[in-house]
Amino acid sequence: MSLRKQTPSVFLKQIIGRPVVVKLNSGVDYRGVLACLDGYMNIALEQTEEYVNGQLKNKYGDAFIRGNNVLYISTQKRRT
Amino acid sequence: MAANATTNPSQLLPLELVDKCIGSRIHIVMKSDKEIVGTLLGFDDFVSILLKVKLHQKEEGLLN
Image 1: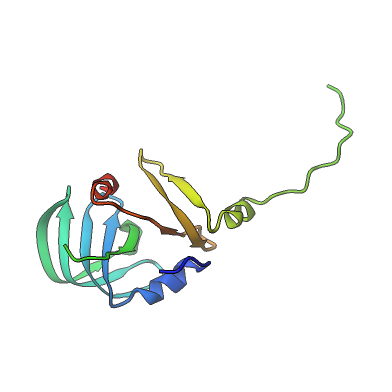
Image 2: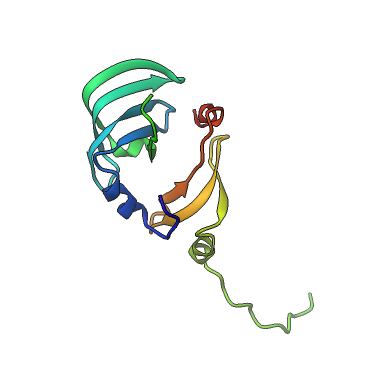
């Protein structure tokens, strides 16, 4: 990714369809393919894996995450 | 209390300061005892932050 000024909303549009890491305020981690999201950071993920304390706890086909819980959304370079 | 004869320095707004940091490496200190370091790519009116973070294998655990 190039280093240039871009706003968060532009970034969010660009990463749809990519594997992402969604970290919640609680510390729980969700990794999956970003299906869609909105301005409230509500997220829909596909092929979701839930990590608690770094350990895989659950797998979901589709997951909806309410935006108020989200700490960050990040792309992941490689699938774990 | 002596009166200050100097004029007010030009006001730097907080978001102006953040804007000046775009492209630079910054530390984001959270309310919890977590800190994230990275290059500031951008931000918005809500101060959502777009940060470029280089993670090594060892450091990935730190974000947990």
